Image 1 (cartoon, helix red, strand yellow):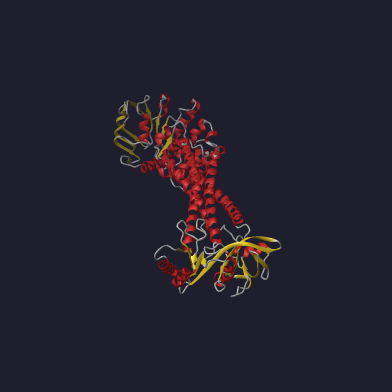
Image 2: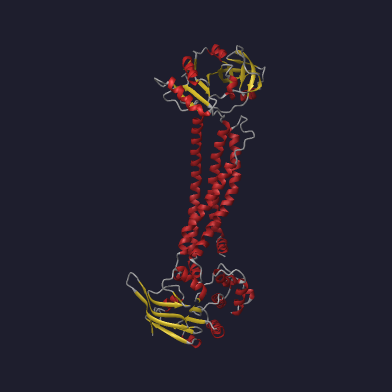
Length: 399
Length: 222
């Protein structure tokens, strides 16, 4: 009966009810879409970033350097001398320390195409530990040759056996690397990997390395390895920065969590505006019906029954608005994730078979809907409570 | 046995300009089956008396017994249940609920009482008894004349088979012909059904329907 009262009253003032519902729809869509957007960013990053959970990265210490490799503030010239690399090897023992040479040069890909590409120099023994071959063979000791990153190979049609020229020097492509994604250590998808000996003779480096990667078999030993390197190398002064990918991933996650919270906050503001609208509508509804409430109370409706009747009104507005908002959010959320994948993975294969609209996105929509219903009921509570507190005599006296 | 009993009842409204004594030491007993008029000039305390009889208000002092229940110390829920189960109200303004159809208005007190089955049949039976045609059952109150609305209000007051009817100027908004018809209906309820009727009115012509009249002057029984 009271539910029917509530529904009828909303129908009686259908325009007012519709406007309230639109407010809730906007709020729910905002909160759910913002959540889905933040979630899509998180999932995309998680998908692109290679799982390097067992890696410790040693970089030259820079006073203004950031906390992760690839931080644009890092001084690019800084390098770790070979003797320090040896110290790192000893400190990391029995885990494998892999010094990495990195530079860039003009590369001719054949068919008259050329451009600058990143060149990574690695000891041929170390390459299979870090990288996987998709086609062709790994490099062998004392043999010239190059491995080409997956995206570079696809873009320029390079296959094992192709010939490319690095800085004018002719090199045969031994293999194409499997797509690896964005790593905290190296990013070979758009790079060319060459043997360290070839790299040194080509670039004439001074026996120093911009990066040393330590592969730790057991993630539980990461802290021990980090401490061993720190205490051995940074004993007197900060020579190197030692970080691990969990830490960096954690920092990324923290940033994206903050973005998600920020986006949810924007959605929340929209919902608060909707809540104020409901409060207003419910208040008007109570004020208009004071006499009716008085009659109901007079002929035997209890306070809690009046309270329930008005709460039903708020809940009906909330449920209808939230369900419509939830359906729209599902559509928007799906669209957002599709657009996200398209924009963020343009030119790569990361977007293939990737679905950012997963359970957690549904979770945000459910959260948005629950928040919408909860906010509506909360906004309706005060007017409902006020209505229930009216005495029949005073209420019936109202004109 | 008195259905309504007032013993030395006083009602004082504290106002910023000073206390207003609406009822001053009122002693009343209304017996079962009586038709009693309450008359008096404006401000004499008629409405206050009716409100307390209807457990819509409580006295400042004195003892009020309604349907064998003392209302002193009752909380809001108890007073509400007393109204619901023992009292039928008929107002000058009809006070039907505009959201509900005619039959639903009459059904409403039955539902409030928690009755699950037969509410519609009972409402229709009472509506027929007060002279409302079946074709009007599904209409909204605003679609009926004043006289018809008051008949519906009487049906609503009767539907729970209350111990007594409290009527506040029930013909005040009706023309004399319709008013007479309503009074005849109330008289029939009293004479044939044995319903106790207490009515507040200004109209001296109503005395012909009543067993007795209580006159109030300045909050006291004259």
